[in-house]
Image 1 (cartoon, rainbow, N blue to C red):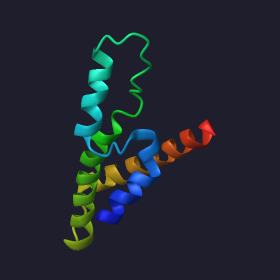
Image 2 (cartoon, helix red, strand yellow):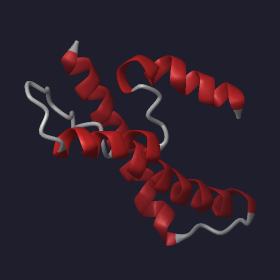
Image 3 (cartoon, rainbow, N blue to C red):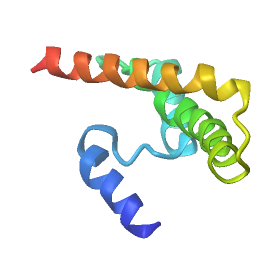
Image 4 (cartoon, rainbow, N blue to C red):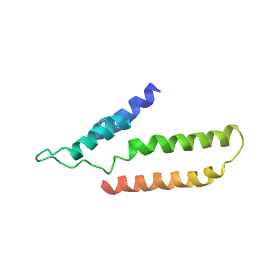
Length: 100
């Protein structure tokens, strides 16, 4: 688990400030958005959904995948979630490549 946290921090730490916890990312982003600071930049809301939605979607998808692999039942949700996760991953990679 520690290696996972270090890996996420090394790959995203410079751009997001280790924003893998919504409490560390969403609160300061909201404060920056709401406070009347002269000459402040953007709050960068494009990334704000990731620390909130990522763990929720990953938990649901992971538990569904567990049921499919170890309980030998294929829930209906898996037939919808697996292609959706694949499409989101492909779109994210395309967006990342387009920025370069």
